[in-house]
Length: 177
Image (cartoon, rainbow, N blue to C red; front, side, top):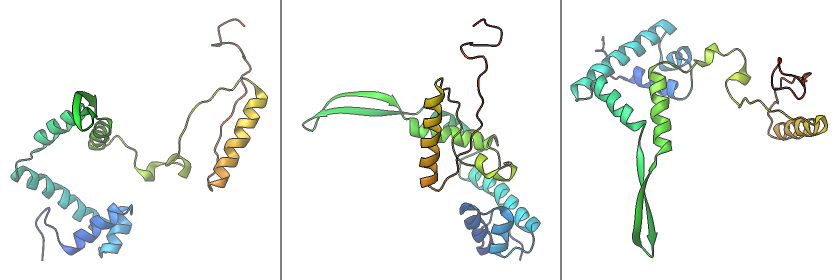
């Protein structure tokens, strides 16, 4: 029996559960009982279009949702200074946790996050990347050795791209020593 867009059934619930556990669409579709990736993709797209209509029916059209999201990007929280249970003073602080989540949500809406299948190597999907300049070669060797040892104890691989600065002391290629 065909389902209306957005209407939930057991198969679609299993599909969403698989996706929420980190499976890709093909894996989640197979687990849910869809015979092909395309069938799972069609079901997912129908749910998405139906969800938008359902939100509009309950008074949450996309423009209202986006306005609310925009307000959350500047969320504040009230802090209280108390002494022996008595509020002595209050002040507002940015609510950075809410602001961060609101901005992540906005970026997801803009499809600004790369999809995992577009990463070239597993190291690009996790970890931290930074530039570090150590001017003393001995200190640099000790730092790298300690960092590699720490990562190895955690079962992680240290990925490094190091380069020797031949223009030591210069801020740029055109500046004199």
